Image (cartoon, rainbow over all chains, first blue to last red):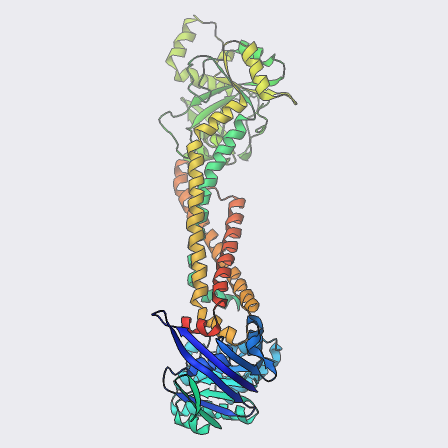
Length: 222
Length: 394
């Protein structure tokens, strides 16, 4: 489902020089696989996830979603590819504060032209499944961290994306809530999605079908 | 949903309302001055004003000497002249000067037997009651500001030089000099003039000068026949009628404009200041509101929103927000203006003219500027990668 070849990324340092974060990263993720990427803080794990999810452009290398070379697409086409193919779960949830839980979930359907009524049915079912249906009209500020991440998870999987990217999804959660999210990610992989998770959490690492470690900007088998 | 969006932007709307409120309030002051200058210009271009040569006793608008009946007849005989209306203009209270109306309270005596010759003011607009009728005596029609400041209305009584007058009408507010006038029949104005002027009393009592009541005129308004050039008619009067001061309409208009040049410059300054202050405040508030939501935009782009979808969304929200802020600003300005005008209205003043063109212009300006500011901010936001937008908004 996902293939990255020779991905490289550097950032400009405050002193004016370049910091090479990723060197020549190759990665392939098949449908149904749950890949876990670990590494020290600042090793480039989140940057890698951003590149894989088209949230920022690589300096070099190529990225494929299935047969589509998405790294060559223009900005709007990349947005469309993201909406169509990728679901994101962020460590800090990133819910829109002015929208209710249900509206946050439905946001994922807004930009891909999915029929509203059908999306709403699916969103309510997901909220029910994750145990936050009774919180659907609450705003993010009125939800606990665990509830917010469950809502964010529902948003990520609303469109059944073939690729699910999760950046430290259990980093801000207690064990119980972490287990709910982890279980969800496993089930997505079980349902055929390609899942890439960046995490330090031992339970997450243990649940990965393949585990990689990012070290000095290079991806190594752990 | 729209209400919720607007609630989310409450501070932005309040900021825009204050900016637009300031813009409209300052603009309304400019409009007030413009109306006065335009009104005065329109008046002087609608008639030829003639006064007797000399210093005269009636220190009125024409500020000339006596204009005897024989001279008025001579003017009427000049080719191109349609009609001549003798007038008596007297200061009602010389000690009172009004800044914003640029004039003082005046009594204007009109010869009602002659149709009003001013092409632009054939009939003065009456708001309550009626205008003066030929043959009437001891009746008065009041300008709107005069009526308001003195608490008079049709049916009220007014004392002028010891004589009691019945108020039969009040004019609509014209935002020009006549707002502070008291219109009376010319015979009554002549009586007031004599009562007011000891020298004139002495001259009349001595019988030394062959003066009749019909000779007591401070000036005359002269109309011209269709197709005539008013300046040419005025020059003809100058040439053919001795002992008169004739103002060419174009000269008087120029004189008025040069005498109000300071106010013209002031209103340009006020308008420019209003646009800059109000515009900057509005644009800054709207752009800040968009930049504040940079993280949300990053998230939306992560979820698949294209530049166009995002721009459309932001533009629709910004239009709703600037429209709400603009309307609130108009309401704020109207409320503020009405309060101040109610306060200064007790002394017959009116500081603001909230003309439809000002209100519509301010609303359109605020919506367009708000949309432009939001568009600019959105363009800056979408130029960032979603990851960068999320990072900056964190």
